[in-house]
Length: 285
Length: 252
Image: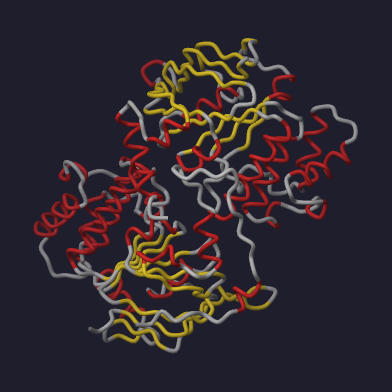
């Protein structure tokens, strides 16, 4: 089986007054038709990795890699024009907060059909039909009415489902979800994740799920990369997370308060400088 | 005796036809030295309850009692000395152009302390920052360090009651653990009473002895931590909430 995505030695750096800051420091991984989780604290470079894949990092940020292959395309040399074709059609990204990612002056329907008409020759009527079907697939009641609403008229959970609908409608092969549920309530989170999970599995997509929540990721992914200071420190099978070896992974797991296993004190991470100095673990398959 | 006693508290925003009730006749009491949690999804009115207690909202009806004494519209200075609040977002609740020294010094001065210098050093030690942080600006601090400063500020007037509005939801889990440990230690040392708002039942279960579950402005259920752990909730909404957070942590 061929991989959807192969990344080798990816680096993202930003120039600062004190010299270069390396946000991502030489990571390698590949994505097949699987659900890959990327977990880490804020500042570990997980979001930058997601953005680098779609070449969404603006100047003065620099992205370098030995290899960035998506299907037949070499992303390193792809022009802006080629990238616009790739984004949406081959790979799309769900951002964290629907409030900032939906266009506030376009109706939901316009935004979803735009995603479709950009990539396909399709009549307005068919596009509308497909958009309504898609809204229905993300469990939005009364999709006809929602099509005419503006983003400020929908709730956070609904906004996030509209984003998912918009990103899935061109039927991409790769979906990158950057903290898709952290802006939502716990009770809504699960239903949004279940919808995403089902659609991704049904369509045989590759999913990159970026999150800071190790427990959540372990339920929705097959493989997990744990990032620390711009490098991958450990790669685990999701079901075997409790067998994790790296002290950082174990520390992260133990610092979460658990309703059913109360402890008088929570474990606090003792950061070892050796973690960030150690070379990145390869997650190529 | 109860530290905080609310009965039939209604809080609203807007007037006439525009009026919407954010909290609808809520009643509960928090014992002295207790840690009490308010849980619910966004828009359920949990933060509004805290804001009404701290005097940030005028439009309320019902009775609020502090140590058995009823609270009026206007709060006395002694109220602010007894009750302090820690806000959700440490990036927004500290003045960007004031140093830590000035943030803490101002509070101490307003409350009429004279040995300000020694107190600032002591406060910074108590929250685990140390004197080295005294002349830093907020942008020179990480999220966890900022929240420690916000906690130091709340502790400055030596309050008995601390209102915590989602104190860790903007932080990483590893930093969250540090802050929750700090809050537990401070409570044990100073015998504080906590009223804590959170949407994370794991955090609430770790910190609090009793909780009130809110939905659409109403308190739908009161239960203690033992009941929470057994998942023996009566109300369907509480059960749904417990269910979704237990599923979120089960595979750890």
